[in-house]
Image (cartoon, rainbow, N blue to C red):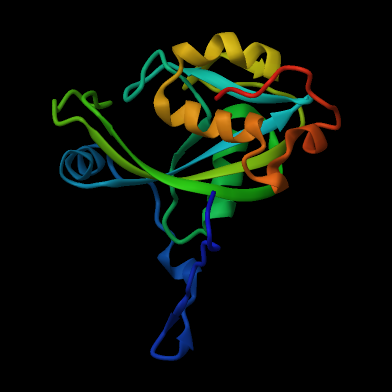
Length: 195
């Protein structure tokens, strides 16, 4: 769990920076492919509480193709991290995020990449927890939505990537009292948390 808040500063020379001026259209594929091959990709992921469960999805594209993962992806330029994530989550899941809370940040390395440049993928990730409202409808980047209860999680755990395990364990083990899912989800759990 984070010991400090994540702040975004739009100040330069003592004056506010108009972040709207920083917004940009999506990069051309060839430009993004070049950046992807040579840079670290800033991303955000969100563990969404929906229908009293945590939403995970099966990824259909590299990196992590076939892995069970939270909703998320690249940060948008010139948009706050939370607004970028709200837009990304709605685009990918049809859900509207509320009560976003930053719960961590990680770096992930994958041997695969979405372009076939064979240089792998290197990301730094802001990790959030949020409530999702609306009708769940995945876009074409994901399939097989899993709405995971604590009881579902325990047998599923061994099939998950360590990144996903870290945050699912955090959410289900109550390591942070403010993320006590028995309160967040409105019920007491009978199963012991994973060790």
